Image 1: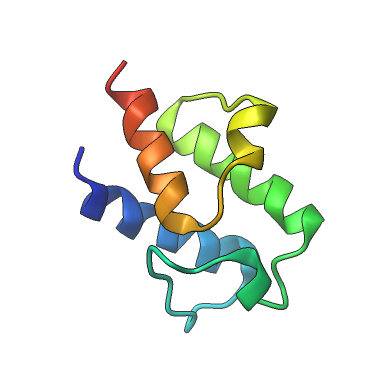
Image 2: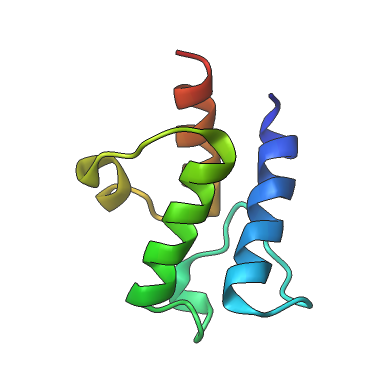
Length: 81
């Protein structure tokens, strides 16, 4: 699966969980830029992404993520194992 496809899927998940249908999500988007993206919604996002891609993330993997692009790369790595 391409990074572009994953970014499109993750963008939909983020917009849905945050209830922000007009949010523009790019690979550089981060939680700090979106007021509604707090620790609780972050957990919901991770859960939704894990369900969508049938993957599990380790806490250490998540702590190193800086933006949506990092998440896309991590998903790609998990899918290519």
